[in-house]
Amino acid sequence: MDALPQSSPDEPALSGEEMARRIDHTLLKAEATREQILRLCDEAMRYGFCAVCVNGRWVSTAAERLHGSGVRVASVVGFPLGADTTKAKVAQTKEAIHDGADEIDMVADLAAMIEGDTRYLLRQLQAVWNACRAMRPPVLLKVIIESAALTTEQKVLACRAAEQIGADFVKTSTGLHPAGGATVEDIRLIRETSPRYKIKASGGIRTAQQAIAMVEAGAERIGTSAGIAIVEELRTARR
Image (cartoon, rainbow, N blue to C red):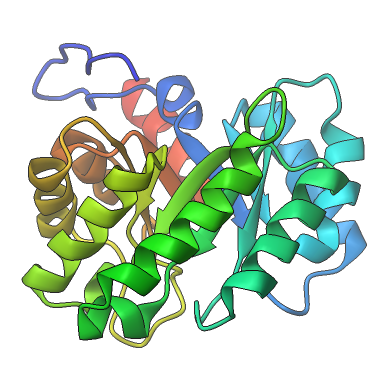
């Protein structure tokens, strides 16, 4: 992403349009309906969001609706627990890509990160990365580390594993873990640990102030179900 533009003390660092280009417009509720997914896609096109993020069930629906629009389709894998086997995660990844996913947001194995089982973690991440990179053009991989549930040492291990296999993004959270979601402190830690890799801040981001804080800390993407409210808040602030 481009560097943040200069702003006056009374003006937000990013305009609504600039923030929209960083947002993954998200609907991951189990009870989401086809009508709601189509509305999500229409909103993403209208506001110029970077991507929509949906469960695998709805990837083909979103891909069909967004075809030719420039809005990308992201699908979650191993969501929300991350405890699926490597074989299952690879199968989910391949199916999502076949259905039209441009990006995969995969929940890393929490047990492996907590136990420091780097071998298992790397093997699983590599297998999913291989599935993404087998496509032409390559499909982008974001690794969700559930940062709020980890110690500093565990977060560093997870970031370095994602970096080692060549993941495109480290993503903070599913947004569903009771430990919490994204924090500015975790964004800074991920940036310091893996300065060459991009960060997606996700989980509990509902206001423009929160979104801007995440971007200023080093996040290139914002995953949120409150994207419209955030963009409208920034538009109002610029008037």
